[in-house]
Length: 183
Image: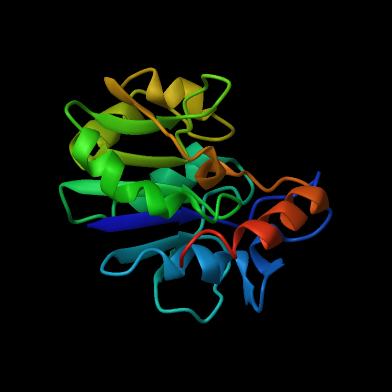
């Protein structure tokens, strides 16, 4: 299986590069990758020196759909997982998402009832087909992309796995969670 990791966004609310923020003694990106053993990694963002294939969306900072579009040509498996760096605990959900996949994508549902497409498991062919629906991928929303997929929503019991770190305060929450959530 291949995992696409989206990193290198603008991090406006956070105030600095989130992927380089520390959780314990490792970066968010390193923490996320530690939970993705036995998968081919494609990182959409600047090179970090970690073992992975690196690609960039064009133009730079043109959003997650453009990032996925840049990476998808390098996926040579039937299934692909997609994770945002600011959701460092989400790879723990991968076994559950794999088991729940029946259609095009298995996507976790947060406590507010929203589907989280940047912590998902997809059929590669279905994702390629959805991406082909757009003339341009710049600044497209994930909602517009997944509208072209048949989604299996996955209820998540431990919502902490879906923590999305957008502020320094949420990073503090992650610092505490790392002791309760296994690497």
